[in-house]
View (cartoon, rainbow, N blue to C red):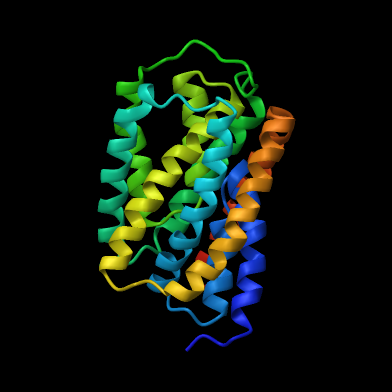
Length: 251
């Protein structure tokens, strides 16, 4: 039974997480502890978080698309593979323990933060791509699987890999990340819903906040570009690293 006071508090929290997700990702590491603190069981918390996130991500993606920052046809194959990967991840996570990821993901996040800080490619200028869109699709599918399976830092992994491998400028990579995030969220929501792991009323209440946050965040990112996205990615990456390590060692 969810207490009535939880609904407005988590909806307000969703505004913040939607804003952060639209720019740099990582809102789940704020929302998930909030859901667990409110008494939502872990797997239902994962499902309900995906439900509210899919709305906020859709609004952010739509804003980026209207700004001409998403290449739909070129990335269609990756969208399909991301969907399949995320569906598989959502199935697996309902059956196994994910605690060991709290040690592995901080290593990846620290590496991403270092890359963001030192790489000259982390600007709004497009660069020569190192892999084709078809070549990127398997990696996109792996990140999609991770998103359905666990989730934190998915946006960071998409954005940094799109800059490093596909040669996108940082704002374009962030926009395309929202397309892939939306795809993986839809797949996860479907699988969690079929598994009965969704609190619909709470999730839809939070979705209203996530949509506002997603709209504000995407507009802010398009206005300020790499000079905002780059430092926020570093802060989010290091913050998630600290949060995951604390969760692991505190038990």
